[in-house]
Length: 400
Image (tube, rainbow, N blue to C red; front, side, top):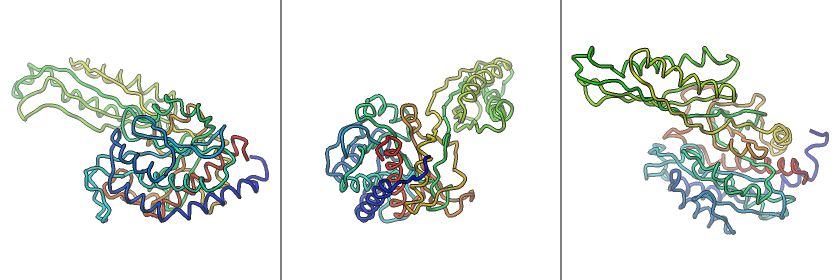
């Protein structure tokens, strides 16, 4: 970064955006609660899109089926600010009078993200921008197929000359109010796998005339957990987790088949490729050694989310100028976010906005919890972070 950054023009732009955000906070809080009360899971977000579009009161363009985009500022290059639209299929247990009651819930903070992005766009509409601002309201972040690849396929980044994409996500593993950016990988690649073991079922009293797939699957499951420790460089973050095992229908019948489902998470592409190969090999050979057959299917998911070096270097001083403390040690997680796909085309940065009382407490209410309910003050923190990201992106694009 050159000396003299942030320059006076950047600081003036940031101050104007922050003033506009502060003016919008009462409406943003009301909007957040309206979104929170009436959530919709991935693929069904149209009512949320309609609510946000009406609240923005400006022209919007449909995107990725149930999402939309809108643009402010001059023609030419732009910086995109992205927010997710979808909720999770979780019954809320927060106890507030504006809790959702339809069996879905914004348990990942997307209601706050949307309200914050709305506030940034409304603030930007009150001032002269040096470069375009594109609001991307993306569906299906929480499910597969996720929405970000479809956003890319739409061509909107090329059509709107997007030079950077900015994101922010609430994170209870980071202390409240602290912002973590971090250069390089901050979220993992996540790839799902299914393993079906085919045996030969029969009566539970006569296992010697069957090929029982259950102990075979159990051996595979326990062995999978050992693969990372024996195959991956211990200085590399990686893990395999199993989320589901299923076999049989009743007590006394040995089933014909048994299956499991899991996730491979990696921060290095070489580790990703190796574990794909070795999970398949291990399952097939383990089953074959016991007279059974294993069928393995792998679904490549989101790539590593890697924050662009120059964007982070420009961003961090702006966060501090906005009064937002920046984490000295960046938060990195083996969680995944389809925001990573945008980094395959343009520089990106994902900021983690802290909501936690103690970052290292195991039993804090975390993301995807039925009790996750960050305070309304986080709307302002996320909005200010996104505004700083926009100014950093404008600098990267040569507009400041």
